[in-house]
Length: 198
Image (cartoon, rainbow, N blue to C red; front, side, top):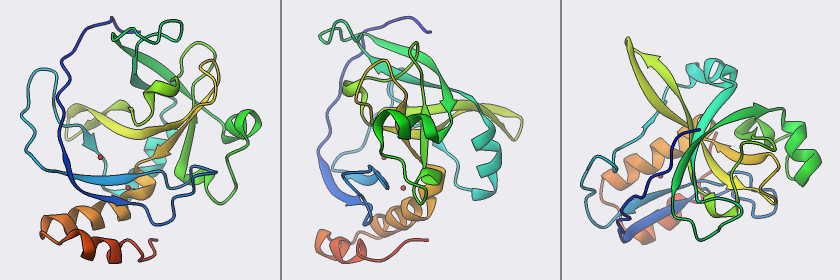
């Protein structure tokens, strides 16, 4: 567990957003979206880009990483605490999240991650937080985002994360689409296309 620190929050308007066309609010399947910000992000000591894996051939290796880590905001017993902590979060079998929350289904569990236990987990305020791990790429160790926090009904139970690599086709398609400067009306049409997803 890392130490707590106070950080400055910087707000950015969103110019465009692309939600996954198959998002299911009940099961939280395909709970991912790509946002285009209206202004550029200025990097600082506390605001930096995060790496994601684009190559799906890494899937077996990424899935084998059992100890992940991610930030949580504040403490469960004090919702007003603004301190940030980094927790080690253990990957769990999908059945754990199904038993506790009943949201995993056979056809969606491969694109979702069940992680956490009574000692390390996220709380409701941590939705959309990154889950990741240190990996070595070209002899350089990097922190890579593996999941996105999506749901937890109780702070002392496993949590559900969206598996980023499983949605890479959607992420790349949205990124390429926005990089060409398409309008929001065109984006709505594109979101209806079936797929194979900050």
